[in-house]
Image 1 (cartoon, rainbow, N blue to C red):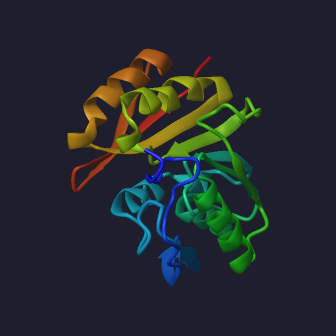
Image 2 (cartoon, helix red, strand yellow):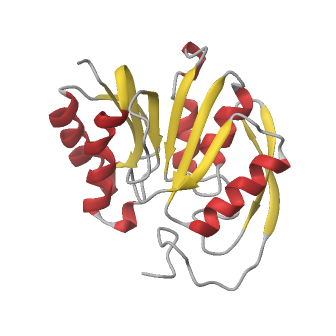
Length: 202
């Protein structure tokens, strides 16, 4: 377990790479390394999530990127929406160090980045949006915790939006979200990836 991207301190031979990717119309430079998820490009699931967030309706507010990795989702949103505050958390300390480096590299100021095992160090209870490309390989228990406990950290009207492949459990995740929130919409289907959205109504 200690060598996986969802480990606290993955034991790897370091091999940093630098590359750029266009997110929401902005070219963002990334430094990545062994021991993080999708180290050579922004993975397709994260791209599908970003493209279907309906972020343009949010003129201000606070977002949580849960399981941020080296930062493609959170930094991409923050760069394109400077009036939003984006909190980014992960259990992987190597990934977090890269996320901080990438925020500095791209001069992105409207982010806060820290270590948290799922929500255990997340104190805010009124996010407008929680987003996650959950670590499926960490197991169903972790993924379920991400979905179930999100409601405790959202404001009324706040949204949980996640991306999960159909073959990796999207239908069962949808059922969990429906049980917790009493609603769940499949916002988009893209090459086997489902973008699921639930809204906290009360």
